[in-house]
Picture 1 (cartoon, helix red, strand yellow):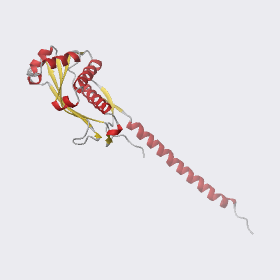
Picture 2: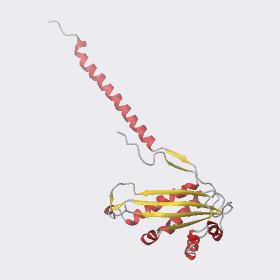
Picture 3: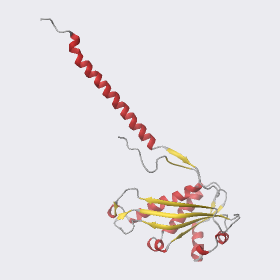
Length: 228
């Protein structure tokens, strides 16, 4: 009987090794792809200030809210005023911000201040710029459903300039709408009302403050790349 050639016996093992090498290569490329996606998802980009006119100016922050918000969330107006004033003072070069308690006190002593000409508002406060936050909606639940947390804050932000050619018109106006929390269908039992309100106020006021200085933001703020 003629003995089989050794090469015949090695054919299957060599093929198996080649297959394993190919699978290993695919796995490496797959891992590298996932790592690349994760890195891309975490990238930051620089966002320039939309309005630089607060730099080296005296500034006051005033906040108006509808009666429903004042009744349901009485601490929101002072929280918003405090956070925005602090954000501007901390991040805007040369800005000198009026203590939020002083601007709030002026609002309380002038109950009809929202009906005054804008030029008179800035004159009465005695500053060069006013950041006027008109909070037209602030809620923690979807309309008609108090069993879910679905916070939303919406406002028009007006910038008043003392030296404006038309002192009774806003120099710039921006609309700001933010939502909190990010989770969908978050039940009432899953979080405390105070925490949801605090988170919504923080996100809203940070977004408003960032109108006035350069900052870094997520390249993909609305979604993350999930490696597959």
